[in-house]
Length: 249
Image (tube, rainbow, N blue to C red; front, side, top):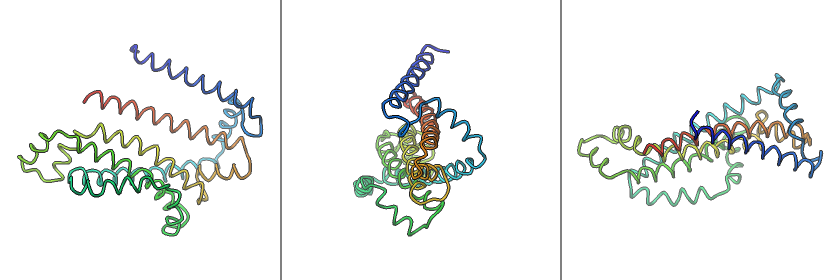
């Protein structure tokens, strides 16, 4: 293992130990009514993972999140390339995207419920609207920062728009686009879980909201631990890829 890899591993281990220590101290301060200690939570989480009735909730959440992320990334890239490539349209619509992005998404949830009803479609839509605009905004800036020489070369070769995007714009803008994907991943996950918490009958968000209603601290801590572990693990991998892409540019 290289020196940099060893330092990263050591830093990660120190961070985990500090978080566990802070968790234990917070438990001693707050008490059983609010928290469970780390060891108790780990034991309950292991038992939860061994329960067959738990896995349908995981499957439901992952399917909703995967669909929402695919829609968010695909739509965000289309909007971003269109507004980034056509400067006049970008100058007109980018402020609108920023304005829409500033709106608390929870205020749109009643509209989504009326449109899609309870269940999977509403969760997917609510997750997607959290991720579309960040991906689009990062893509717009990425396309705008592409060297004009590359665009002139594509036009000199008389490439059509789709070929220009696929062979020139996308590879050149990939580092910034991937940063947008990383941000969109986190926000889409949050949106999907929020959708499950407010109007769903299955999923980790629904399970978490039910546990809150029943004041089942063990279940709250276990589901939260699983979500944080999943999000932190994937985000760490995405951040490493992001840094690699920017280092190569």
